[in-house]
Length: 114
Image 1: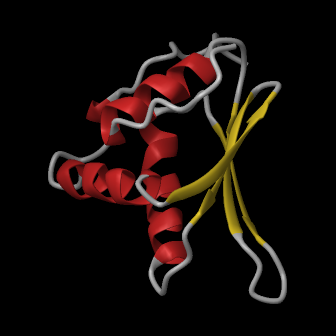
Image 2: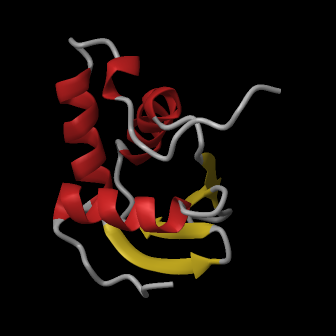
């Protein structure tokens, strides 16, 4: 295994023609936060459901993993029409990165500062 990637988004990892749509999808998804939970190594977000939610989450993760390879992604879809959760975790420093990125995208600042 090589060294760890820096805790910084590398938007050049996403094709230039895909970047605007990725940013728009990211803003739209994180504006749908209904609840969030702090985890020891990140956060999980319950998102408002809708007909395009799962598709948008899959598109988000497929591109976000390129520019932020230090993040772990889990999409949880609960049974019986239950909620959809997106979990973002990683090594030390990831929580602060997630807070800054979401605040920059949506203006959301309601995180606990740990």
